[in-house]
Image 1 (cartoon, rainbow, N blue to C red):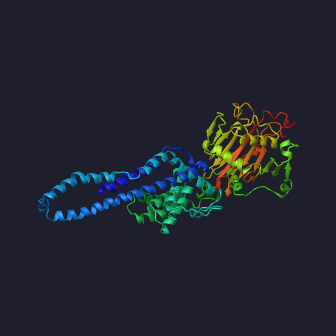
Image 2: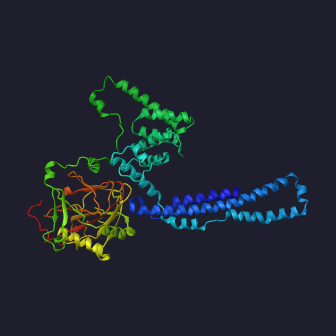
Image 3: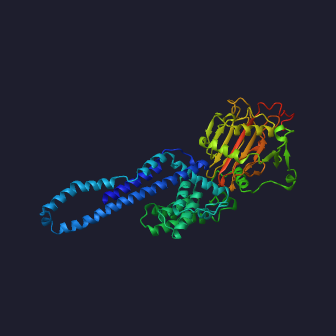
Length: 544
């Protein structure tokens, strides 16, 4: 039976090694659309695994019966071995068993009773997520925590707005999130998640990770943030559990030394220090990472629906109407439902501009081609993958399908702009915490070659289709003016990136907020200057 246990152990080692080191598609976390494939893959593997278990149980039953019959035989034989083998029949059967039957048993133990599972796993493993996916998903969860001011305990319990399938985090999950933050020297989030892991451990939740390891990370994270008292307290707690912990013993001595030195220095300078001098070296406090810039704060507030500058005066300027674009023949009988979202820059939404069938067709065409989204490098002018855009995208040309051609024509009808020089329809699907940080769609003066290879001038306007409902998060926000546009399935928003003079409108700086719950599908059309000379004439001043 040792051989059986060894075989099973080796099998599962190999199985999890495949999970860890498979070299399939990466960046699964950047597209919810591609992650849905993983759900079906896992379901298929579970079905195969259950068949494998059933076959193995049948095999083990055969082995168990064989072992029970042999146990009785060997008990009798070992009571008087010489007398036992003195019987010629017993001698023959012993030789036969050891030469033949034990070999057959060995083959039975080593035999894979369910080739379907192994072959299925081999086929599917090339599509498994990688370490990069796991890290990316962890960072996305931390990003959502910051953007939407989510409490660590609520996230762990799965209490998120709009969720249909509630799921909680284990101690080990919380530990992995803290460890991911620790790897980036992000001690603020290391503390949050290690504290949550410790809280759940203290509540008696079973886990593979132990309190000593969690306390080790947590005390160091607190020390890095300047909370020496708490770091010392947790280090002492660690040493009560493991008095021989080498690093903790070293830290204890160091923390005590630093604290005694600070206390001594403070007493010596207390009579001499002025209020101003004391203010120059404030005690470190727990804070957000250093990249928490003012624009980042505005961006996150807008994503939460805070600080949106929709005043009553501005609200009075916004209307909704039926729009036929100057009696365009294709819009006369079915005018577009146009509503104002913002006045400066003017942002308009077109409601029910896409049908359910059109949106599903666009997703169907795009999904096999989805790749990690790229952006224009302002220095080289070439497309490159950017960490600040977490999504996958695909490009669809009008000639590929009548639906794409029809949507392009509709955009031209409604905007009055020539789309023959526009870029192809870009379809994007945002992943876990999917976002696109603040940016401009047009090329600035320091990027003269951004669209040189296209030969169609700058991006004069942006048309953005929303193709899915997003239960929570996912707004398009304009950080310079404090505007927020929320995704409504089947609608589209439109704005000009350039003034009529051709100068860039810097108030159009915008961002796609992280998707908190759900899957966000969008498609956009970037319309260029060439071909618009008589459709949108130049203004007489720079700001027109």
